[in-house]
Length: 118
Length: 117
Image (tube, rainbow over the protein chains, first blue to last red):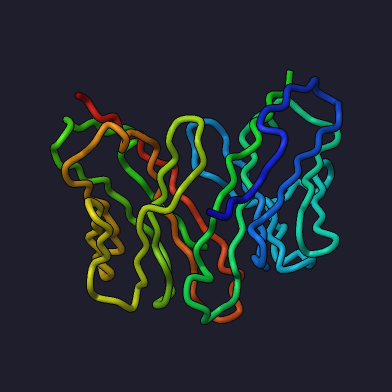
């Protein structure tokens, strides 16, 4: 069964350091999402890509977070500098993403990258 | 903006019994999708069931079924014959179907379900 791959699974870093997460969506999925999930809460969208273009980054703290999906396939989410409040699970998800296509609105999630900032 | 509310932070059920998880949402749209996702401890989030708002019939998937009340903006999940493997955090989610929307999922805060043997 096709999966969304994420790495690293766990990352511990000190505040002010840089950290990066990688996501490889299911092959053929045009839409890619990065969500942040603080412990005990529901995921919140950080950024959404349609192919290589950003569709929604309204909740991305752009002073320290950046995301890219250069070739419209895999994606990288970067945080620089990391702050204590960034400790969370970072979830990547993908979907076919095309309106009117059956099943296109179903997101498949990766296992997530858990970040701890000390 | 759409909001999703799960009023039960935690629920528990005895194995083989039935449990219902509540979800309400707020939207001005008429066309949308609703989902229940399950997130087991330290494992990835998986889709349990989904409902298209234009369908009156409630969705079912084996032991999982929903009670979709569009006018009341309510979308509860019923788990029948609960099993130990059902223990997880359950998230209700909303997604617009409006043309031109970015189709992002808006999640509730989740309900932690414990299944007692």
